[in-house]
Image (tube, rainbow, N blue to C red; front, side):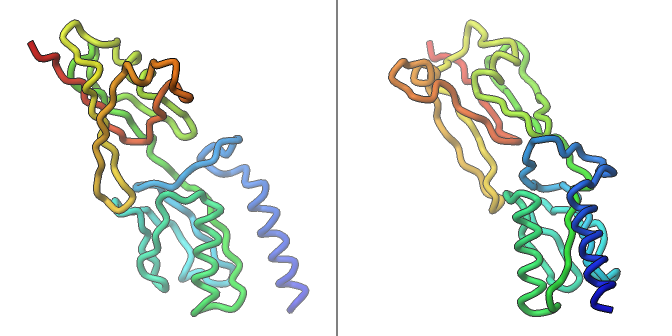
Length: 196
């Protein structure tokens, strides 16, 4: 029986390494788990504990044995390690767990206010976008825009949000080491109108 378990573990490890049947591209990008992602969790010899689990808006999955398990903000590998550790701690002896990203919803960036084409712009998995790129993608500023009073609203992992005030003139300053501000999925950019 030990030989059969060792062979199954080697097969599972090889399947995890290759995983050609994954519907989500596993190229060289590292996916950070976020709400609405769906994970296929397979626990060796535990079919009742295995299956598809969707991250809720709070970034957690609901597992029949572990209950609420936080996943958002972690890579798939880090989430798998944490999940395995939780199983091993109180429930199963040396559990063999495989995580596979079953589906993900592409994120978006919202650009509102005094830009020529306000709207929702897709941000694909693994893609990066900066504040200035998002504004350029929205057609640039209108003549009434106040580029030194931009608000960036960002959702936090705990469900709250934070608002940053941004001055484009500061982003373009030669003294600044990083010339632009990287955006995160689901950021909202508000470009206000200039005061007269």
